[in-house]
Image (cartoon, rainbow, N blue to C red; front, side):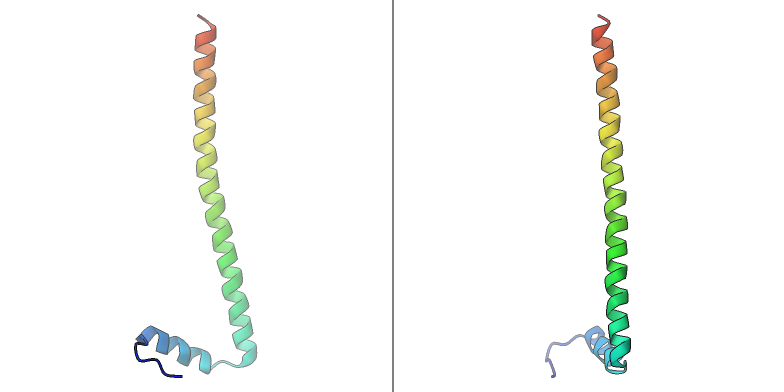
Length: 72
């Protein structure tokens, strides 16, 4: 099926997949899925760790302020 506004990268991708066997297409799909899952998990853990560190710093600051106010 031909598309009028098809980009050159889309044409290259279609040509690439045309040359693969069915088994290679399945393996490629699984590899892309696994890669996406790993990247998403890693990114989520890194972002979550950053938020956790910020929350921990805020808790430590609040504890210090509480201790300061308690000593008055």
